[in-house]
Each structure stands twice: as C-alpha cells, then as structure tokens.
Image (cartoon, rainbow, N blue to C red; front, side, top):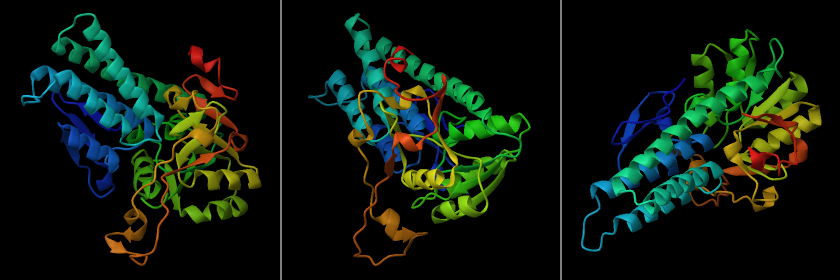
Length: 348
C-alpha cells in the first residue's frame, strides 16, 4: 500500500506525484489555495484519489469555519465554507469522484447543522465521513483486485495506460489492483506500461509502482501500442476511468480511446476497472461528459525545454471517451459488469 493521502489532524498529507520517481516528497496542505493547486497541478491525481482529497478538503474547510479561521467584518463562516467547497468541487471537471465526494461532505455538514449541531460538531461529522470514504476506497480496491484477477492466466501479458495504482486511489489501486492481486496469487503477470503523454504518468508512476512490487514492467511509447499488439500479442488491456456514463461510455486519460481501437482490431479484450463512485448514471452517454482542457505548456515543454515552436497552437485535452462497444467489461467492487447499468447500480 502507498501512503497517497492521509489526514494529520490539521492538514492533508499527500505524496507529491510530480516529484516521482526521482524523489518521494510529502506535502502538508492546510489551506484552500494549497489544496486546489495540488489537485490542479496533479501533485495528487487519479479520480478516486482526488475524490478523497476533495472530501478531506471540505473537512478542513469545516474545521476552519469552526475555529473561526476566517476573519473580517464580513466573514460568514458557513457561507465561506460553502464557497470553498464549491471551489474544490470545480477544480477538475471530468472526474466525477471529486464532485461526488464534495457533495457528500457538504450534505453531511448541512444535515448536521439542520439538526442543531455546532460548527465544531458539524466539522467532526464531515471528518468522520471523509475517513469512512477513504476506508471504503481501500475496500473497493481489494474487491476490484479479486474480481479482476480471475481474468489473468499464468504469465498474462497486460497493457495498462496512465496510472491506476495506489497513487491514483486511497493507496491500493483500480486496474493495478487487479495486477497486484494476480501477482499475489502467483500468476506472475507481465505488464506493458504505456508512457501516457504528455505528462508520462505511465512511465513515471505506473512503472515505479510495479517495480517496487517486484512485477515485470516494460515501458512502451503510446504510439507503439498497436504495433505491440500486432507483433508481440497481449492477453488483455486494463485501464481505469474518470467517469462512466449510464450506457458504459468511459472517460479516461487521453490515449485510452486509441488503445481501445487497436485492441478491437487485434482481438485483445479491453477492460475498465473502476469503483461504483466513478459511474455517473445521470449522463446517458459519453457525449455529455465534460472533457478538461489543460495548459499548452504541458505539450510544448519536456524537461523544462521547449520541444515545439513557442507560438505553435496546442490542443491538449486531458481525457478522451471510449465508446461502450469497445469495452469487454467493467470491473468494479461489485463484480464484472455489463451495460445497461441503470436500475441495478442505483440500488447498490
């Protein structure tokens, strides 16, 4: 397990993923600006992880409200609390876990206040909810690992994209949880890690996680995935998700769609691994999923140096949406699912 995120009592402690794999640096975030900067600039990233960061962030804001940290004649603690929660909610729009977790925290706070609880007691209720969500994420990771590990045979060759391990969650993982569980069962999986441009979450983070667990990991450039399938063969593709629509269309890190198209061409099963909190049953299809656009400098610069003309226009979507028909199944804490999801999942 990786100590991705923790509550210290007065701050949110995160492992700064922008410093990996060169250094393991922990940051203590004790104010709104610091938390939002960390989420926006991917110091903490991955849909489940930023959901946990979000709910801990709302707990921190509730603590500030209770302690009277917001000063000034116009300071209204509850109003400032709600404004702060809304800012956290909107910092990254594609991953539904963030909004879901923040809404859960705000509902907990307002319900406590409506029962006559003090600001201090309402803040304590939110912190309890945050800890419960963090624990539930770890339980979900274990369940997803067990559900998906049955798909891997001895020595299975698996392709991943982006980072879906402990760094992307509360400490255990989604797609990599399946690999970790298969390895624990002695299946000795071999993992091909797509580098995941432009920020190299696969090359930097996934390879680091796999190697520290003693699992064979080979990094491949994103553009080599189809050629890998055509020449070396694969048993399956495992990816995570940031939002899954009611029809199964799945938003994930940019490049996922290209991998799914190649997998369909070469007959490789393509699975999405995600907890129930990533499903957004209010959206009928992927066409309604908002896709975050990120800074042009993420593409223009590599290692602090420009690799494109400085004035060249850049289109830099952080995510793409893979149609449900390209996906073999969705591995969740409730088992391996197939659409339509509406109805059954709403009862879980």
